[in-house]
Image (cartoon, rainbow, N blue to C red; front, side, top):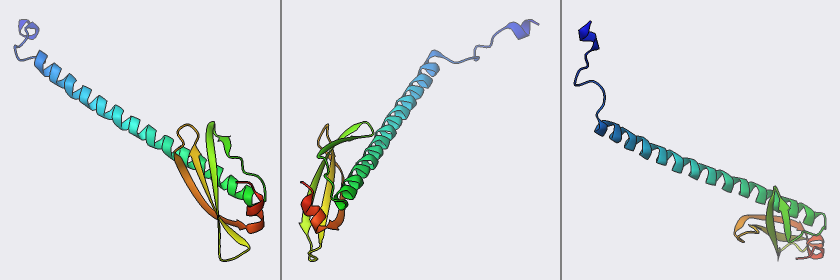
Length: 127
């Protein structure tokens, strides 16, 4: 019975082994945290591009209907600035319209949509 109660000198981990294991775990945790942060940032950028595209498509639809497109607006809890550039085409009844959508916070252009509208509707809509 005494043989089972005695402890071998080799049993368990040394303090140095535990510290090395903790250091490896810490490096792994920091790497995982950085990867997660990068993933979240990319997902938010994709979300911003999708919402900006919706804003641009709504603006193009409004132009095709001859309606006004507001320069500033909100969508999905974010503020957006819309810039419309019109370019004539060889067809006098058709105008090229570039709709740039930028985040209102930093002014960075997020999405650019190019479409074509009836020249009369494009001329009547304010810039």
